Amino acid sequence: MKISRVFLFAILATYALWVVLPMVWVASSSLKSDQEIFNDAFALPAAGALHPENYARAWHEARFGDYFFNSVLVTGVSVGLITLLGSMAAYALARFAHPLGRVVFGLFLAGLMLPAQLAMVPLFFELRGLGLLNSRLGLILVYTANGLPFAIFILAGFFKTLPRALHEAAVVDGCSEAGAFWRVMLPLARPGLVTVAVFQFIGIWKEYFFAFMLVGGDPAGAARTLPLGLANLAITAQYRSDQGMLFAGLVLVTLPILAVYVALQHHLVRGVTAGAVKG
Image (cartoon, rainbow, N blue to C red):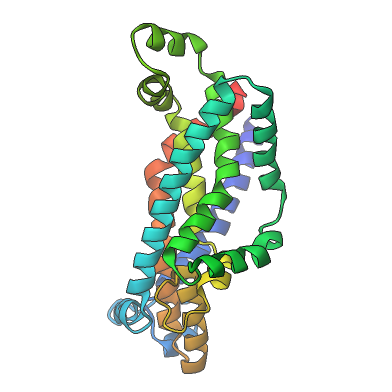
């Protein structure tokens, strides 16, 4: 038993180093000059020769400030809409038995099976016809529609496991169907809501394909998100040999994901565990 524990600990420690060391390397490289990076890419920056100006140049010269705002706006609104609409649809499909509801639920599940690339061409022309191409609103609508099947699939399972007696007690006490949902059932599904929100946040924050196809054609780049800005920065850094600024951009993209995961990891583990046990 002790040997197996040591072996398991060794595997987990190796995996942790495999994940953490590249992040440490990127963070340390973001504080080095190009000459230091080319001389020894894996050496730590000298204590008295740090280059925090790499972040300032990435933020201003590479327009990461504008891209960061676009990503925060698009991701925040999209995750909010996915969580709100997904919880309402999942509750209705889970609580009210109707033959049509099964068909609708099956259609939502079909959305998980179809690759996003298949819908790209009609989606492009649809947004262009609506005047939403190269706009943040168009990107928000696409992300919301793309994330709803996953949210409904996860949240429907949570709502099915909640005791029906709680809903009935709320109705007896005078709550309407909407009141019972908002005041009783939705707070009980908080682990599922957090799970959906975290997964959708990570997916949308780093999403590149839809962003490139739907807002990447604007020469001004007014609606570009961080992944597009990072790709543009990589091209710029290659042409100008500005690798320190490129690594600083990588850190700026990664930090929000780490912050959200660290802040909500307890709720995320509870949500995944509850879904696995109750399912």
